[in-house]
Image (cartoon, rainbow, N blue to C red; front, top):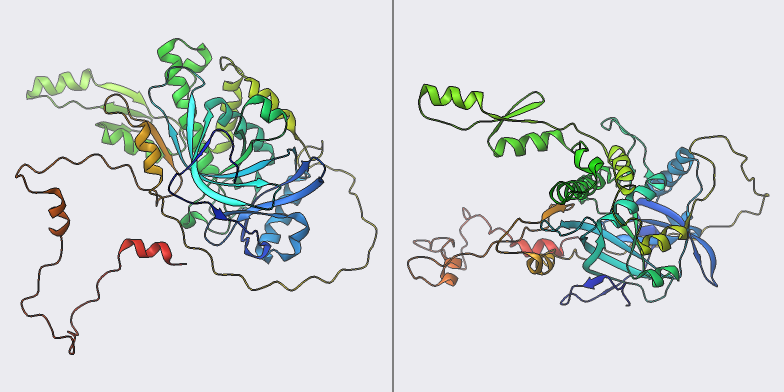
Length: 443
């Protein structure tokens, strides 16, 4: 499997062959038309299978999709009123973004961002494979990818709990140099991955896209204030994706939140000290909450003032995307009524094979550990899957001089005073809990 230049596969994880099956696609996240040289134009449907893995199938196999996926496609096409966008590419990859690392000690405005997830491709091709790894892109590329892809975000039916229409956002990112992108190779379609526990009827990733944009804009603003960047970026008031989470973070830092104001309380001794603390308390404004659409507009404004933007690779990338039609969303247009034809008998849908076991996510720590520093600020991490383990700090040896490996046995169960014989098991004894690694093999 060939990879884009800026993608580093995990060394100890082999590539997994991919055999797209339309009947296994349970949730749709995107649809587009691929204009490949010498192959003509073909529509593709991108979605998730039962275990959350990204798959892509030709639009000609739409009739083999489950009824729920066909209903999602119909709702999106009717609601958007737009034909699928066209991507002119000789080589296209799909990437699920499971974790985003924003380096804290960056030197410039448009610094790298590390994306972690599974890369699948290349398309079109016969030997498709999926492998986890790290994709390195710039902040501007992430902002521009989400901004330009917002108009073609996949729209789901709005449920009773959602206040706004639910969407699945994507970002077309450069995976190679400008001259390679100009040839239509090295293009990466990235999708913020939705945890399985959050997939309630659809795979909307509005909140995940808002988190990624918020962290990138926050880092840009901090660098602009520290290094004298554009005034509009320095003075811009950034909202937060979750006001409740922002308040909880302020409270952990010692602030007392009252409405839209948070006051830092510094305990002092005596009545005079307490009065002085109240008068000189540091006050900050609790930022408002915003949805993904508002962060998209903020990112659009920031791109106009970002130093050195657009880059050479950005100038080569965006012309490769063309809208499906020029009609705005939900306006009248003349439909193209096809001539009546003889109905074609559809093939019977084969039984769905058992899903492959989920891969563990410990491999991300190999990349995160390479970026960690003993001194200085820590990078900001945006996680999309709750199963991704955090990078554990190095443990200190025990002061008693006991070997560290002996601690693995310290938490074991105490030996029974009189163990039951093998022929007569103790009925009161509860079965041992399964080790955590066994859950990786449960479908």
